[in-house]
Picture 1 (cartoon, rainbow, N blue to C red):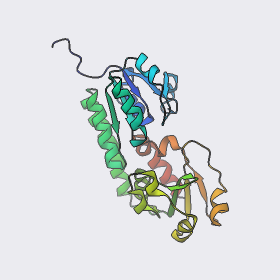
Picture 2: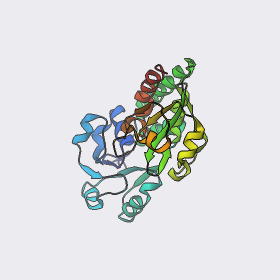
Picture 3: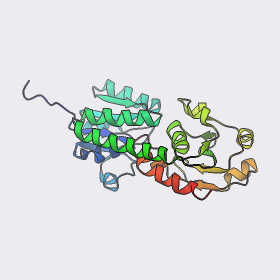
Picture 4: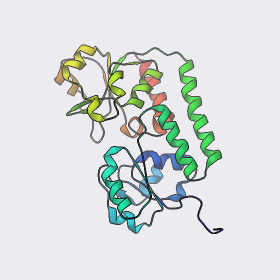
Length: 252
C-alpha cells in the first residue's frame, strides 16, 4: 500500500476549463493530452491534441496511458462511455452556473491533491465576484447570442455574468435551462424582448456583425466576444470576462 499513487499523474483534458484550472493551480505537469480547441494558456497549445468537443481519438488517448480523463457535459457522454469501456477512469462535469463553476474548480483541485492552492484560487474568484457585486453597476438590456442557426441565447453562467456586471439578460429565464435546446429563441422573441445591446459569442465560428439586423431588423450595437473566455465553464469568465463586460457596459 505504501507505493500506491494517491492522485492522478497523467491527465487527458478533453475541454478547455480543466486545462486552465490545472495551470492556475501549478499542476500542469500532470496534463498529457488536450482538446484541439484549447486556447488558454498559450503554453497549453503545444500539448498533444487528442480530441475535439464532440469527438475524440480514442486510440491516441489510450496510447497516452492516462489515469484520469476529464470532460464536460452530456455532449461528451458517448466518448466517456467508450473510454470507460476501455477501462479508463473518466470524470465528466456538467457545471452551468457561476456557483457550479467554483464548485468544479474546487473538486478538480482536490482530485489532484492541491488543496491549499485550490482554496486560494477559489477565494480569489469569489472575491472578484463579491467586489463586482459591491459596485452596484447599471448596464443595458442585453441579448446574448451563442449561435445563429438555430438561434441560441446565452448559457446560465454567461447570463449571470451579465447581471453581475449590471446588465439585464432579456432571456434570463431561458438561461436556466440545462440543455442548449432550452435556450432556442425565435426572431420574434428577440424583437419583443427589446434588447439594447447584443453580445454575440458564437462557439466555433466568427460572428457576422450584421446578422442580427438582417434577421430581426433590430438596429442595436453588436459586440463580438471571445468564446474562449465567455463560453468556458471554468475560471476564464470570472478572471477576464467580468472586466470585459464592466468596461463594455461603461459605454452604454
